[in-house]
Amino acid sequence: MAQVPENIGCLNEECIAKDECKRQVIAKNGTAVEIKEFGGTATKKCGKFLQK
Image 1 (spheres, helix red, strand yellow):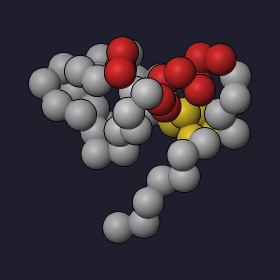
Image 2 (image 1 turned 180 degrees about the horizontal axis):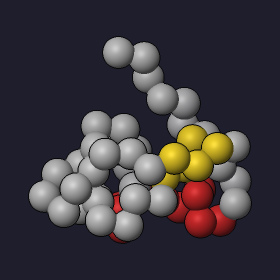
Image 3 (image 1 turned 180 degrees about the vertical axis):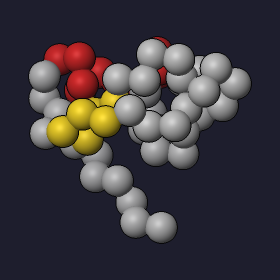
Image 4 (image 1 turned 135 degrees about the vertical axis):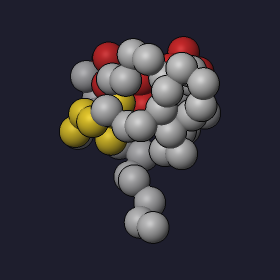
């Protein structure tokens, strides 16, 4: 599986890790080169998680 570059943001509001994920931060502050919604749910992280 190919790794997702660190400059891709995520705006998945239901993800359990959204408040501790660097992808949320860069998506909201405008520094992400692209914004996606990865597959995190209310009970698990997506696998593309980056620690803040």
